[in-house]
Length: 400
Image 1 (cartoon, rainbow, N blue to C red):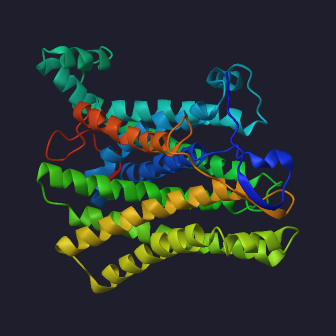
Image 2: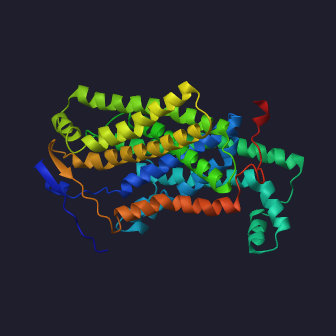
Image 3: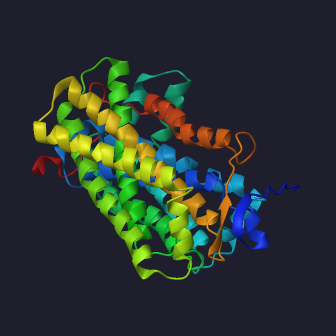
């Protein structure tokens, strides 16, 4: 395959092979999508496993969102590879010491788990549609029944138990999937900006707030489109979740930065020049100021004042959008920022993102929107709304 090298501008002393930024914007989209997967599943598990009843209106929407995002997680990596078919080598000849090979196993396990959980949750609805519809979609539902039309009370209880235990297994699966991404960066000792024991934890907490924020935006938008009132108890539950986890993520990211500065290892002078120069706006202003501190203070104010009604809906939705932006900037500043620091510790490299091309901004935007377009189709196939057909409830729902 023919490739075209793009040499980046730089200042100071850098190694010759560093004048090419290998990991582009697609490698920032990749951990962003995995974060949405883990965060959305967190909301689902809070209802399915822990019985948080106020999250019932979005529990099954969270499952569908997690699956749709997960289906596109490998795409940025495949587009980035010069020979995408080589990706199968990690599965055909697995090596347990390879982080990339382990991703293949984690991803496959998690996709299968999500599909099974959705099937058990929607099995009564699938059977109903298979028996009622005679069109092409009815044949699809009939195929999805797998020959099982039993919707008796005993069968429903079995479905609920399967949903519960699959959700339990999915908690370490979803969070392990994204924690692995943080591990991938944190274990690279060659770059001071990445080498941190806190990196997996930071990725995990930021994933939770991004996934919950996405569900807030999707839920509010769906209520407006369907012209039904927003369940304020459900919205408050998700707002409290974002509020709690954003404070933890905020503190952890500052601890990581303080740890880098305090250790003062070789190259820290270049890091300080980097964060107070080219990274000043993306890091301190966009990621921390506008994307993290502002929604945290906004949510704190609404919780303190007991805000309700339209003001609550607007404030929580706007805060969720800011959090989504902040988490993407965090991924950008980690993936791209880490490569803009030369391994010599005495130079800076500048990444110039193209708009067109296989690894340009347009492809990155389309990859980010693709799960949402897929979700539209999934919602038509499996309606997650309470005002329609209600799928199976969690086994422990009655206990709370």
